[in-house]
Amino acid sequence: MTSLPRHTEKKLGLVIDLDTCVGCHACAVNCKEWNTSGPSAPLTDFDPYGAEAQGVWFNRIHSFEVGEGGTGRTVHFPKSCLHCEDAPCVTVCPTGASMKRAEDGIVLVDADKCIGCKLCSWACPYGAREYDHDHGVMKKCTLCVDRIYDTSVPERDRVPACVATCPASARHFGDLGDPDSEVSRLVAARGGFALMPEQGCRPVNRYLPPRNATSAPTPLPQAGLAARLAEWAGRLIAR
Amino acid sequence: MRPALSVIFFTTASGAGYGLLGLLGLLAPAGLTPATPWFGLASNGLGLALVTAGLLASVFHLGHPERAWRAMTQWRSSWLSREGVAAVVAYPIFLAFAASWIIFGRPNAILGFIAALIATTTVFCTGKIYSTLRPIRQWHHPLTVPGYLLLSIFTGLSLLAALTLSPRIGVAAAVMAIAALGLKYRYWHSIDRSLSATTLATATGLGQLGQVRMLDPPHATPNYLMHEMGYRIARANSARLRRAVLGAGFAVPALLLLLGIAGGPLGVLAPVAALLSLIGTLGERWLFFAEATHTQALYYGLNP
Image (tube, rainbow over all chains, first blue to last red; front, side, top):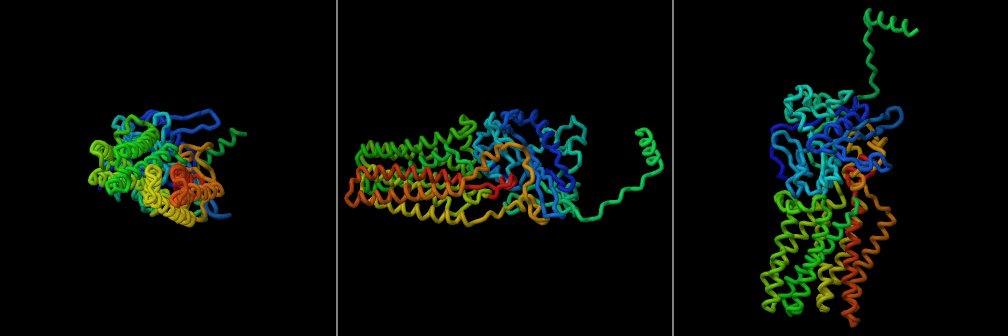
């Protein structure tokens, strides 16, 4: 059903910290690894070892430069489906393959119904949907729907693969519809923002801005006696 | 946007077909076309052939053509689905109009009116598919739907002029050609001067920190998103093609029709005008895609 639910019980989504993201692409790699054996499997590659390698990825890491001169900085920018509240990719779908779930707000594609008309990828302002040439259907981020509800995995692992793998803890997952959730508090504390608000899609995912670069560096904590002894021993051995 | 040849052929051929069938529905019962069963067979047959060829081409645009029937189901929310429903509803109406004409020897006014209504609805839905796509400012434009409707009427009328060789229909086709020329000129003038409200600053949310520039793309080679929505046409090529469309597609057919009516060999000039109107519309549709830019390309360093 491609009409949008009036209200979703939860608004599951991601909060991505642009201050701590180091641009290592681990989230994209783990996303591909997890989802290539999940419900959307496989995420096909075309000419993977050739000059024109391309393939289906749900998550891609862009890098931008912001500002000039001394205040300029590099910002790594992971981008995946934002699970919009007014998802235009869902309403344009002619077949009912696209849906926004009323229970948790996740936007999904039923690959058995998709006719591969690509209209949803045209309707999404963010470029979150990709066409699988091998399967002739659209594929997209599922927010690891096969993982976050799986009671057979330990509770701390019931997060999307990209969140689980991020070595910088720049990715957070939770219910952005609940103002008391950890992610909502994080967004409130750090001034989290939505992408392209003027497009009117009301995305659920939020991005946290880079912190002010000119603030004084945090002084390192004074090392204790044991740590200093260990460091001295280390230097002794290295000599 | 990458020009999708199957969709370009579909909207041109079906647009002309719906235009022709809709106009037959209105003009034939009014006595403005020949009423013989043979003419009914030829004109309705041509319209149905164009519509069918276009629809078949559009189905081959799909990754799964065998599931095309599913596209009928979501008419509550999707203009593409509404277009599919309208296209299917139109067939029995067109067939009933044509059959009653051929069997009873005269076109039925009520069936003709319904045929015109459903033809207009179908083309209107086609235009709405594009005009409701907000990320593409050249499509999310007030002249998109009028453009689809007007070109459908123009190509339909030019075909009808070639079939009937009627001076009245020829004049109407020439007037529509000039109207189409004016509309496309205004449309191009407008998209050349408008800017997308979405910029790299709003796409990344980093505008507060200063000018945002792309440093590294996510991967070394273009992906689906770039191939499909990162298409760019050189300004000089687009200007040349625009002139060709306005001239050969709209102005020359109008001139040929008026020459024919003024005493020239209309039997030769009108079919040439009809052919040129179809070729011109193909060019216009190709440009409609090639000149359209998508906001997601911002993330890859292209401006919408």
